[in-house]
Length: 108
Length: 207
Image 1 (cartoon, each protein chain N blue to C red):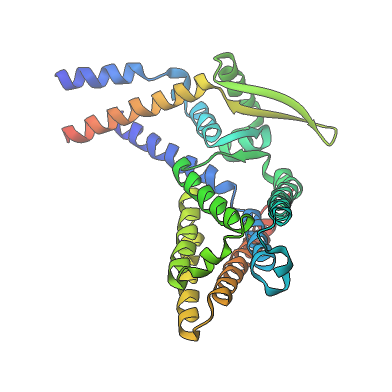
Image 2: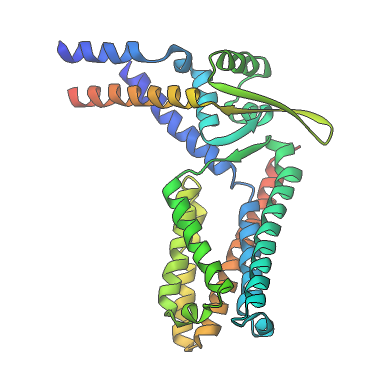
């Protein structure tokens, strides 16, 4: 009973903004790079342009992703990178997730 | 919930590895490294470049300039190729170290090697046994395997320096010739592997 309570507590502690699969994919990609542009995220997240754009805006609003607009050979290019808060939220999410998995495995 | 979380956690790890491998799946990094080894072999060890050796301060400075020019040139080449071939196909990204500790060790080995050359302590390199050099090079390949998020081809290529060390031993080459052969073969291995991966990458990905 106590164990169940702990698991529920861990599940509640999961950050909803990060838990959504598309945003989790975006954060995972950005955690592996110093920075990446929209096309790179599009290629590796397999999301549609519209979906990716919406999720990136949500992550930016939460302060998890930083957006920089620049020009390469006179062509506009938008570059994204994880902020410190974003990195912290992503790491905490993974740690909580691991805790849940470990507890469940111990129970088995 | 636990099954879903377990799958999610595995997917996160898989995607993380895929992103780290993405930087290396075009072969450009290996081409750059291969050229670096070949130039290093030519400039540092080949008998024709002995005029660059010597303890004089001006020579130390000249060697420092040569090292900076080589390393800067290789990084410029890698960036230009990435810009022209990869970023137009897959989008722009700059990779983060997969394993920062291994990255530091790798950087340390390369820094030591260049340091030996700049300060003309090459005799220390010539003095080490062929097998030790083979193991250092073997370690470099394994380090690349770890650093690139377990790109299997680096592990497949890793026994090559040990084979070269064995050949060196059987042919009883002088330390200088042994070092020259080792660096050239490792350079060619990187270059050939890089070119094959690069051709495959260009075929499978379109602009």
